[in-house]
Length: 283
Length: 230
Image 1 (cartoon, chains in turn red, yellow):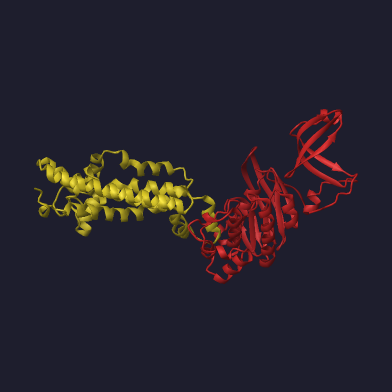
Image 2 (image 1 turned 90 degrees about the vertical axis):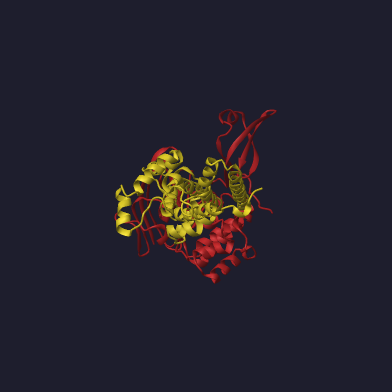
């Protein structure tokens, strides 16, 4: 059980705010922290890691990491941390990055094989691709056999194909090592695949919690299909109007009537709903 | 004709011995301070920085005068050393090393500090999370990743000490075989109008200095390429 009750003033993007989080997380859970940038997700993760000071208390299983009297330093917390920008030791080879954490060659070999990095173990980080670097970083975070694994937007700098591969790696390692995992992420598909519980932060406070399905499935009532996107353009074609909407990496066109065309603004966030068709999937 | 065999190389040997010792001592002293300065948010940081930079702006004669005074028998420090250990600190090699340590301090600490400040913060944090102490992090992650700054600090300190003149003259005088370094020797040759020897000595200084600096810049270029910095 991870019990968090922390309070910390933060300099957010919208001025001063208070990080004020009270949470209980079950062991072996995979938690996603979501929310706008500047909402305090990364700060919460860094407080958990012991990289930033905070008031309040943190207990993990039978250990006290933070209370009024003391704060256990990061190096004594038995955690793994995956940084958004990898933060590999650039003077060490892939294998040395792992062995620096712990001289356990068998575990290092095992991790590198699991993540298909064994052929690269002698290389320096500067010669690796982003996806490879992040896999090394993930392996390194597990070398101490941490009970708590913290990940700060681990996949946000990678392309979509690489993300899917790494999501598999993360899920496999989470299961194999039995860690309690907390991941900061913006990507609903990633959260849906990985996390069994999601907390949404806003202005330093948790405003929603639930499963990914409860929080991200937008369709309500009789709608069969509901997507959120950005209105890029409104084009007049004879008597009708066509709205161009970007959804994820895709651009779609939606027919609008004159009244809609006048009320909607370009750049607005819009919801695309449909219930007339049964969508089909193809490869 | 130049009498090569009569050329006395001892001043160069003293210069290099002095510079070598000064560099080693300063590295040990400056590294912890540079590490602290690079990581601290303490409000007194500018004060420490200002003091450590003073020798750059002060005339060597000012520095030399105070060091001479502090180390001499007239000051408590000098008196203490002479009474407790029977060591005289002025007009000998020991005094020269102490004076050089003050004089060259900023040249050691500044490259170290800016190198350590440029280290990726997350990389150091990753080391703490891996269970390593600040000292282990400095030795195994910090220093290996600032090799160019490290080399610059060591070489510039060495070169700067070889090149010092005013402080050495004031604190050490010019005792042959003890405190007469190359720069002082050149000054004396000019004084007695022995331009030939002054030329030779000066040429040796220029060539050595150039080779050392060339070595540093070549090494830094290779390092930056290897670590993918540039």
